[in-house]
Length: 155
Length: 380
Image 1 (cartoon, each protein chain N blue to C red):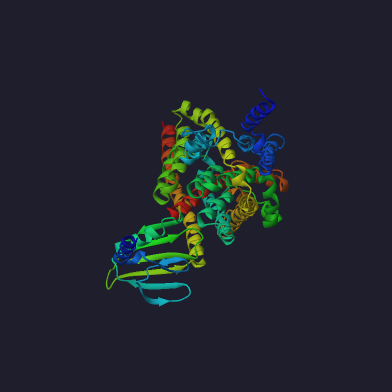
Image 2: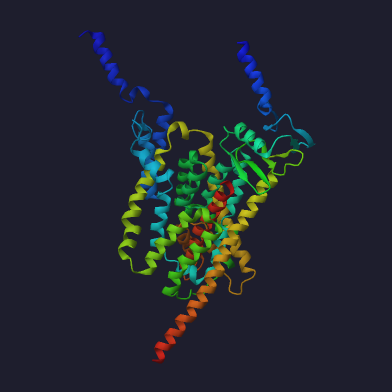
């Protein structure tokens, strides 16, 4: 039993990030992180681990959540919740200066409304481009057809 | 054989029947299934879909029936249809192929500005999304519920299966039920949103559309949509393929198959497997009831969105459009266009709006597919 306990303790010391995790709005926070900025809606921490280590920590910590998605952006890994979690996103910076920056943002209506308005405009853009395409092609084809008919009548 | 042994035998036999496994919620689902069968047969509400859906609900809600599970690792009958037809998202796309083969885009090509009406009519989709999130649905569920207002069955099924398969049954049922109720829902909204002068606006007869334009249309539209909303190209691509087959005039046999037998076959599989997803345990909760009530609001706001878009466009157009045709911007083809025609005739017996309303109606199909594509892109 003593052996087992000592193995456990040494494992914990080797992988400190998995020992225990605090949370911000239900989103796990690696305890080793140093808090840079904290408000009711946003938490910024810097963690003395590599970007890859932080990402794998979050992958493990969030593996049971079905509505979570990981996006690999050029400058960060962006974790987004599409479910009912109180937090909206966790951004893990790829810039590893002094550690890895992690920003957790509260679920917010600005994002929801913003993305909806954008997508509604997107539907208009799609159909407007289709409108433009049809108008141009319609004019070109009508011209061809008219010319062909004129040729026929002339002949 | 003793009496006890005989009783044991009887009890054992009874255990293999459904009688000992009946529960109150199962009986409620029989009622729900029977209601849809009644609406299909007696009221002729979307009978092609509501009848198989109703029967699917009815038959799957009997205890021990080997329909929606697995036997020895193999899918049972309705599970097989569901898995390969819906889960693999094949049936909605094949239905779109058939729809494309039946559709004449002439009125839309002749008056392409009605495409914007189809976009405006998606207003309800985006407003309902917000309401659905407010009551506690996840974002993916909210997107799948809100697309009901687009009034496009295959698109609703495609998006729901993609984002929130657990809501497939209620969403599909709500979409098809409200599509069937377009003649009841839309006229009061049209009257509320327009004045007498607007309802009497006459529109110029549409120009004839050449065969070349009709052939080019599916290529242009699938190209543009593939570029801008690639996630929805399985649906729109099949829609345009069906249309290209029809307009080309060189594959008559394929066109006939797509719009006839193929469409009918997949409709049977679609209806019965959608119905089969509505087992008592999944269905009897607050969510489906909420979906039904919100679906109605969604539909109404989409109708308002279409009418408002026409009114806004009229501010800039020399030749005004009749705002009644804005209501046809929700897809529900061709029912919504017919409603516009009937409403127009009520106020001027010689004002035929049908062909003018077909344009926004078809634009609504493309618009709701584009909205679905936007949602898929948002979550993928």
